[in-house]
Image (cartoon, rainbow, N blue to C red; front, top):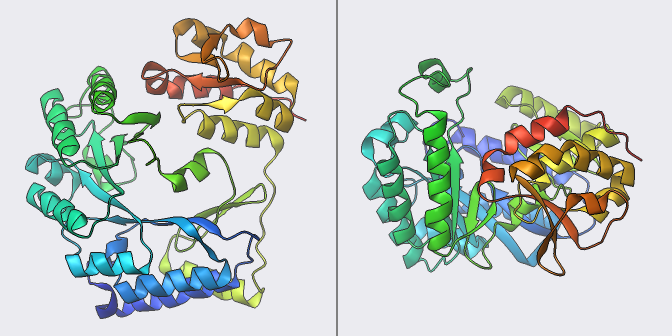
Length: 385
């Protein structure tokens, strides 16, 4: 959204909303009303209530929004007040994700965050005053100079705020960013790999004891409060994304919009001229299988083997199990019978598949070493139906 100017006071934001709504109105409907809507990327809380309402009305006009839809918005502390939050709520917002990152001033500065810890407490108080019961907090581990004690303090303070959902991310250093040029992966002052692993295990232990279900590699929720929108991604279901850099996955094909304003505006113009026609090549079956594994194994329940066999063939499932044999022994991967709630020996599945058997990563070790497991799968040449 560019600078931190609030929505109605920014001509650039107003123009962007106009183009965004043009894109939405030109995009073909999928047939069913939207079950989830997520406002993320940039700082959506810079939008005025009227601008947010304009987008939601446009979505409803083109696609329909189910009465029970989960409608989420990412907000940053210090970018909204109670009236704005109540206005968002009146437009249909039912879930808020608060970008917290850390409680320590020095770590917030390292993150490049403009808010303070006091801003966080004020933001949560506003959320409570607005009677928004479904809200999430984001925390980041593995920050430069971050200690295990600071991480435990952040977890404890986050729990004390009583969110219904917590997202716990490990810092990823991208070489092309300003942060990446300042801090090199594996080098001080970044914590060591062993230290970040300890942070991950600590989060799993502390949050689980506090009553949060570790339902996805980086996400924890109280019962009934898993992020319905993000599950669409992890379950590899179709979705539309709108706006600069947004990605869509529709009818087995993926495409991404341009990331710069000028190119995005030009792309929408062409979309209107072509009456919503988008070139969306189908993803080959082996690639779809790898996408399904990469996303589905992020979930605690994993993937049902009969679903994989139906989509990609029994031979592909056998190949998956054989590839993962070392990680079964390592204790990072397991087969689970959802009917008996018991673990199953993987050898039993090479000749038969039960509809109740699921392949999943263990918690927390399998989650922690998921990249190693996925790398082994991505090195295979799967033969699919």
